Length: 215
Image (cartoon, rainbow, N blue to C red):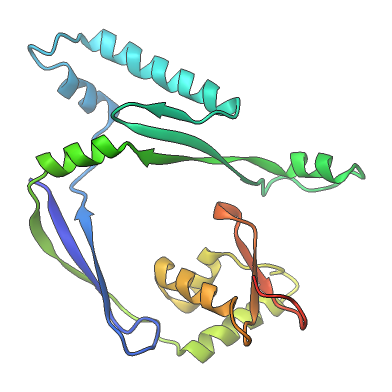
């Protein structure tokens, strides 16, 4: 029986508001072999060897299509799309043109998955949710002004020309979601002190210089 958890965040942004949301409680992960056992139950018409072959063939072909720049949609499952970001292990050491440098520094860094609507509907119809408890996220021990100064001090160091979401969350002890919201607020408005550059996993934050337009 599936369970949900109510996760409550205190005054995590220091604005006097308490926030909460619900999430599924994951009991454990079902691995490939266990999934195959479930698929090949008596009366299923599937053999274990057949199920293994289909899964391996699907994974192989999915890789090939994504590598060619296609997105792949599987009825009843969803759509897969490769994502691109900066390769941290590579550096722009040649004197080539901009296009060449970009190609050297970019790599596929993930695969985005969007569930098929019918899958979501079917799961919702089959799922019998029960309350599985509550959890609480504690607010950062630092005031907002302190967190802003910590970010600026971090970026002032020659060792840190840019800052990622994970860096800010670790510095301020905010959750990733709260850190993301706060960073967004620090990049907008007339008193913005940071500038966001990049997208998705490659999104980073730098110190804003006077006269820079809003991000």
